[in-house]
Picture 1 (tube, helix red, strand yellow):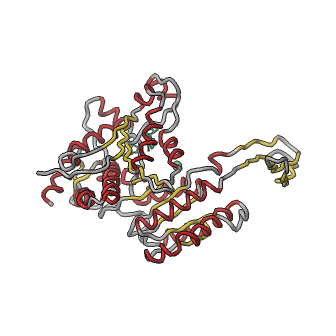
Picture 2 (cartoon, rainbow, N blue to C red):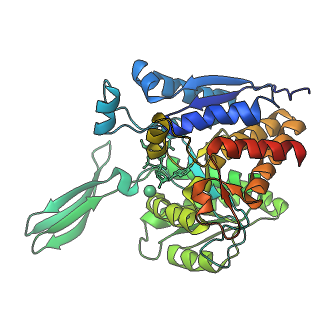
Picture 3 (cartoon, rainbow, N blue to C red):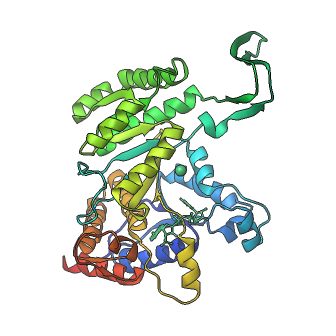
Length: 400
Ligand code: NAP
Ligand code: MG
């Protein structure tokens, strides 16, 4: 059989532990038999990051910006225990953080739905995508404890020496204090990434904040979104048959729970952190959550939302065949291949991505799945190992 040809390579970012094993298996069983896979390969495995003083992470992000579409395996974010385990030169930063900062990107997370794994929320029929702003607010805060009586002030000193000053609070006794910030450039990038993504997948975009209480800070987010929407996206949204609206975060929460799903919900940094875990869990499983980083100039990096599944890897090292769910990692590949196909006008590549996703969902709906899903599946199910699952998907891909 002739394998599908590609024009531009994908940027391939390999990773760690159990997901690194799945990565190779997915390529061997589901991709290379059908596609003459062209990739520019970067090994972001922790050992190689250490050997290259993390230069490989920077290089891979530069390549993603150059080629436009990347696919990434989960990677270890080192902590003290990992520094010891791997004998690291230093506690390298999170690769995802580095790549996100270099691409100035926004992360969109979407659950994969299958019949038999019912969302906890009865009304949800379609996936809900969370877009999380990934800069500033409490993640870059300055905070202190206040020992006792005294005045706290907010002071900004301009480059020319002019000063703005406001009283935060006249403390009569001990308490706490925090300062946060954000940037017009970052909020604008976030807004554009959200508008572009909504057009791309043709879904309504919601944005929520708390401008009734935070009349300057949150209101500024709302204003930037509205200005960019009105001047750059209004017509495109109308032509695409989709809408944008802003609402208060508490109203958004209530409406999301009553909705059928099928929208993108843009959240400020903290709201997105919290709500994405709520959405993932309520849809069934973290192992079924996809994630894509989109830069404001339309570069894409696809990955699974889960980590390297360390506990399974230690069992694998003891010689056990594990039942680790490869679905989100397969969907990272199909997402990247489809996007590459769209950009390079390769309809066959897009069609292959669609067929592979259908085969994955069909396999699960036929009752064959990994252990994590079998435990929440409503119906007859057969829990199999990761490789057995991949082979079942391949059989369905070939025989329908
Ligand atoms: P994790 O790898 O997501 O795994 C946590 C637990 O969730 C697993 O032990 C497993 O539960 C279940 N799980 C997650 N994905 C699964 C899958 N595909 N199939 C079946 N079960 C799955 O999170 P973690 O253990 O907190 O982190 C492990 C490493 O991953 C850390 O070094 C962390 O830095 C890294 N990490 C990387 C990324 C990324 O690269 N995007 C994201 C998060 C974490 P059971 O053991 O109960 O089966
Ligand atoms: Mg979180």
